[in-house]
Length: 127
Image 1 (cartoon, one colour):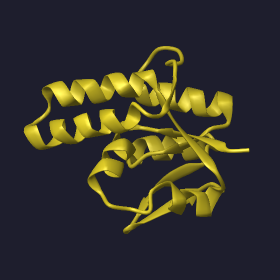
Image 2 (cartoon, rainbow, N blue to C red; image 1 turned 90 degrees about the vertical axis):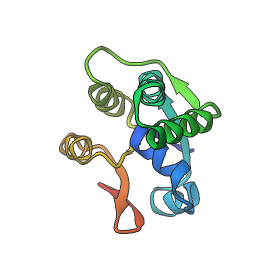
Image 3 (tube, helix red, strand yellow; image 1 turned 45 degrees about the horizontal axis):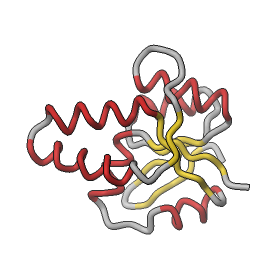
Image 4 (cartoon, rainbow, N blue to C red; image 1 turned 45 degrees about the vertical axis):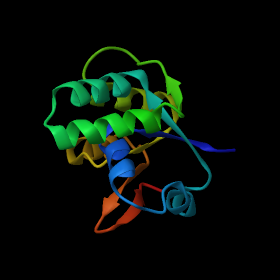
C-alpha cells in the first residue's frame, strides 16, 4: 500500500525547477508513495503565480500544471497553509515533502516523516 506524500508549494516548485529522480528517489527511502496536495497549497501557488516576480511566478504556474495531475485533498481547518499541512499529516499519517525549514522543524517535532533536500539529495527524516 502506498504512503500518502503531501507536497507543499516549495517542494512542488522544486520538482518543476530541478531535474531529479523524482518519486523514484523518494520511494527508495520510504516505499511506494502517492503524491497528494491540499487545496490550500493550490491556492497558495495561484497567489504566487499572480503576484510574485516573473521567474517565481512562472515556476509557480508550472507547479500548478504539475499539481493538476495529483489527488487533491480538501483543506483541513483554518490557519496558515503550514498549519493545515501539519494538521492533515498528523491526522492522516501522511508524510510531507517540503523545503521549508520552519515547517520541517514543526513536522519533525510532531513525529511526521519529512522528505526534504539535504545537499543535492532527497532525504527522508523520521523514518
